[in-house]
Length: 357
Ligand code: HEC
Ligand code: HEC
Image: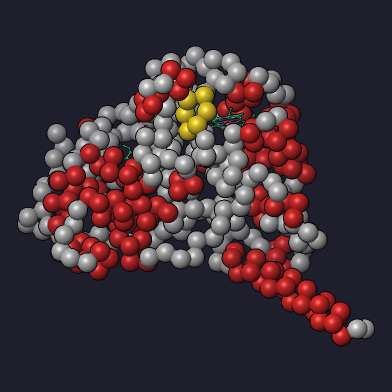
């Protein structure tokens, strides 16, 4: 064998080996059973075909500011950011249940029910903007909202900052991350956003398939994916989040008349054509976050899929087609963030006391 050719071949082997090693490394420690990483299934010869798919795998988070993320995590679970001292971000974005609360609309301060279904915080960093109508440009801007929302946490930014400032451990942690003695809303929301950025769910079975593995999804699920593409769902639900990257009218083909009060994007732009236009939701982990739609009009994922086909695409799906699409949607459930519940420091004599009014 010609020596150059041999080198080329061994290089190729080395590359394949490194690739496999990276694949197993990126999934090490995850919940996903990696039997196919050990030879039961194979990496397809060339994954270049799949890299052209309009849905992209969730990248693995490697680099983040550990101290800032830890601080953000404490704040996410901090009930004293609410006026009543009883509501946390996790109350409505429960990380034990897919980052949402599985309620038609959330229960906030004084037991108020909000006007809209709470979206998941999982993978929210892949959204082009935050909220159903996109009124916050990013996670940091969003995080200031709920603290001061009278029917969510019911507090205000000054009060929330006073609470944190009265607790020496928080003063110390903010100083470590940001320098200086001052705690302010900008820093609070920055830390919350840094924590939320780590809340991604990589390594779903579908992502392994996208990465070139076989057998991580069944033939039935694969047929569901083909229907998802051929019927046109992928037109709006694509990219890393399988949604989250455009605004679309709910009632694209057939007017949606179950909820005509929530105007969506119109609230931001005041343009007539933006009435009933919403940010296309992420379909990652969708099986975990019933009920569905901004108005929580159904608890049944099969029904949600049929409604989408009818109102968005003008198509009536058979039960069999619907089951296949739903089976595909379930392959989008990824590795859930593994969170050690943070231990919060005690209040001091100067900490403003909870107020339920
Ligand atoms: C009382 C329930 C409640 C609490 C508490 C709450 N949220 Fe929310 N959250 C919601 C609802 C409802 C929405 C959707 C509102 C809308 O779109 O108009 C939302 C939207 C969001 C979004 C946007 C997601 C998307 O897909 O657009 C993020 C991110 C978020 N909340 C993070 C937080 C953080 C961080 C906290 C704590 C500081 C928090 N939430 C506290 C109910 C709550
Ligand atoms: C024209 C764009 C468009 C098309 C095509 C489309 N969707 Fe949607 N999808 C949306 C929008 C916008 C929403 C949010 C509707 C709302 O609640 O206001 C949504 C919501 C959903 C939801 C509920 C998400 C949640 O978190 O509540 C599911 C499930 C869904 N779509 C699946 C599908 C499937 C399956 C298809 C194909 C049969 C499809 N969509 C086609 C734009 C689209």
